Length: 371
Image (cartoon, rainbow, N blue to C red; front, side):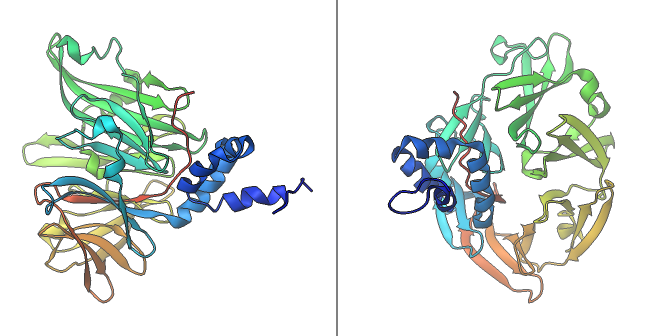
């Protein structure tokens, strides 16, 4: 048995500390060198995050209609939906002046944020309040913007944890018009947090889906080490074919798969780790939302059909006990009970020209500072 001190056996100490929130652990780093080393141990960090998943939060991203359209990242305790606090107060200082809104992805406790003012990417851990500005990704296939030879029209992000290497990765897709060749092109690159470096994907890695358009980042998600976007191909005016683009974070390989929908859908991770797609356009056409789930054979199976009341304009994802998060026509965040058909108002009203999004968030001790 390990040595003990006056209070408890030494081998019990990690078990006790694992149950503390990130804020308390950071405060206790100064207690001793042993504790500081323990808190940086990858095994301790991983075990702590596994426990954090049981104490997760609901993250609501919206522009507050009652507060001059202020960008807000509101946390609620997931189990009770009791308000917790606003993460936007703790954004990295170089991002607080963004007046056009941040594009971001969130996965396993970290955020990847794109600042539209300067196109720089930042990794952010809200729990530790640490951030990392990513190095620029420029190479001969994508000249620096300052040279004035390109006109970027669209940026798409992907971000998640590679479960095999336990490393966070960013997928950055930039569409641009090359004025020299007078043709539209795309630049694909993958960032690895552990090495703080980019890998530019070659043409043979992406040629099979170069003719599709990628939907905005509000309709993307990560599940079980795979990042998903909805994409579409325009065959002629008035007709588009929709598919799902997947990027496997472990192998860094893209996969293009069929979609069960003929219109734009919403990609949503389920509580069991599977990916689903929700026919959100059906709410306007037939007042119904079909939900499809992807199985292990890469086939889609219909899970259920929701018929929300007229007050509901958008449905986001499941909560628990047969309830889903929704948005009203006036921009209010709602909880809709599929059994009783009752609606509960959160007291949040988003700016109607911006709308809102909901995510699941867990705190993590992962250190994103550079060595």
